[in-house]
Length: 360
Image 1 (tube, one colour):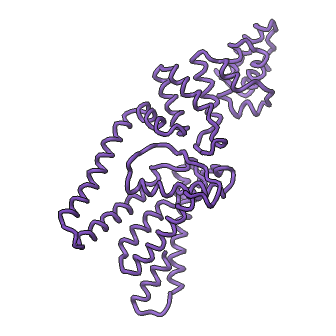
Image 2 (image 1 turned 60 degrees about the vertical axis):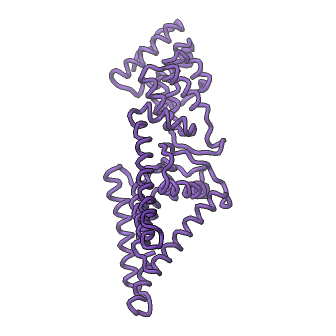
Image 3 (image 1 turned 90 degrees about the vertical axis):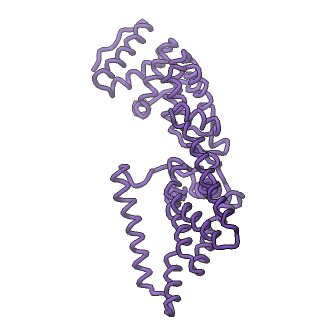
């Protein structure tokens, strides 16, 4: 894009060719800004330059196919945000011939051609607006794996370009033979429509419960949203509803069902255990996650879940299975936590008629 702009500028000035030195300087400056953002500014704020997320489907090809397939709907939302949702769920595309993936590629190619055409016709501001949309969009477009495969908030920077492009379009309408009143009516309709969408969406943000009740109902694949809904319900003392939602969440198998939505599995297991404990349904936890032999390191990789799990086993009178977990947790704990796990082990030993071994 920088090269095309320089070439057109050179032609307008009567020059014969592109000045490679000027182009190299612009590209170098662009790359320097990207490097500064990725390796200095972003780590300073977020702690690391890249998210470290695994690619969708375990391969970059699937990552790109699935992400590109979302581009048409994301760009449609930019210009016509009829519905909003915090969901990050996407359908997994597994082929470059997937219709949505082809549509995404066509959108990118068409935008590039349109930008060059606008520059060639002297509409530099419109070309800049279109370029702004893509420049702001690409870092979170899914070409590199992200924790959330899609998110409306990632489009907020692109909105400036979309708004500028819309404004240029309305200005162009006024220069046509279209009646001025009609052009004004179209602009007013666009503003009022956006205002109505804002008015309709705002009440959802009154509380976590209101927001995620609505968003999960609209998109049942929104796993992280359902987690937030479960936590909100449990905090409000609505344990039965929290149990119902956590059962739906635990029963989902995104990869097998052809979709993707971010959620840390260790956090899910701990949530399932805690909600079942509050609902008096420890048997559901053990049924879903049967006991097995664990190394000490495995216990500590999911310490929160195993602390809850050991308690569930104890309450189900399965102290033989709970004791090794209590011992591993006690071994790596200090203070009140170590005392809590020691007391759990002591209760289990007493239930089994054994003497509690002295702590080392």
